[in-house]
Length: 115
Image (cartoon, rainbow, N blue to C red):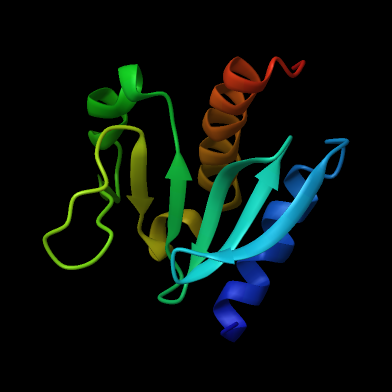
């Protein structure tokens, strides 16, 4: 992992410290955080964050600063529910916490977890 990924993962860990079932795996060219065996985010090599969101909120969330459609490689759209957030946006703790909350809302919806 790059130093930037390590710092970002540490910040994410702090935000989900109360979650009972958390693990990390290498995936999507970054370090992915799984809660209840479902990915919530992945710290990307460039310092950005890949976020798993509700596909029904996808277009609305793309209007947020620094949010773009995630790609699995140049020109290969990952589809609704996958958003990449720019590193400079999530350097702000409040913005990072907001994106983690969005990812956790979706995670709870699909896994039956509790808020």
